[in-house]
View (tube, rainbow, N blue to C red):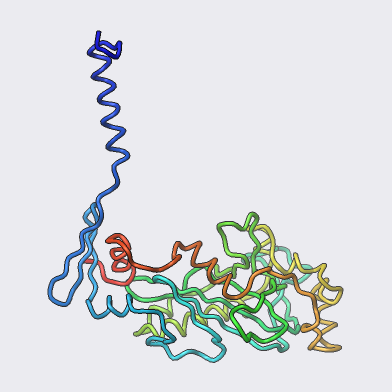
Length: 307
């Protein structure tokens, strides 16, 4: 018997188990970063590689500053926030009366191809849309994580609070922990036109246009009630008698369109800045700093080109 009271065979088995446990606890090797000429190359332990020009890397690592980059901002974009590889455009539409495609009361389907719609004219307050752009093949493109909110006053600060939008197709999740707070359903967003844009400026602007079209023009139905926890329209019907139903909303609009600035819309409990920071957090874009080879490799893979 060995000093531990184990037979030689048992001791050998234990040594093997301890060696295997040590290998499992050993951290994975970091990616390899090399510089040759004007190009930086990152290679993962699995052999995947990406490259990036040094000048572009330097710009990406530069200190944050007020700069729209290569984009001419469209009308209505109140702020641009970036962190890591992601960018969020904060767009505001002023209060006005909209003509919308709304599901008819006698529609045989609650959503999908069999849905019957009718036109409604309702006033909306300030409409705040957060268009979230992520890197795809080395350029920023519209993501599926876009959100929508209401306000009764124009945005003066990123610390201004937001309210949930009383709209169908703006989804509530339960629990909301790992999902958007007010997700814009983009099932019918046709992205084919984005591929025809020749530069990032065109793709960003086209992405915002498509998102607003998808939100306001493609038809409001009960998809959120069927596929998510609810829509913020359904959740808001108890906020005020004037928006208790779409018919009541139409009637209130006919009487006084600006009534929407007096409605106690459901508070989101967060400011614009806090919601955007939450989006970054959910997408693992916190901090955005580069402190290790892994951080640098992630930036090169997100913004560079496959090698």
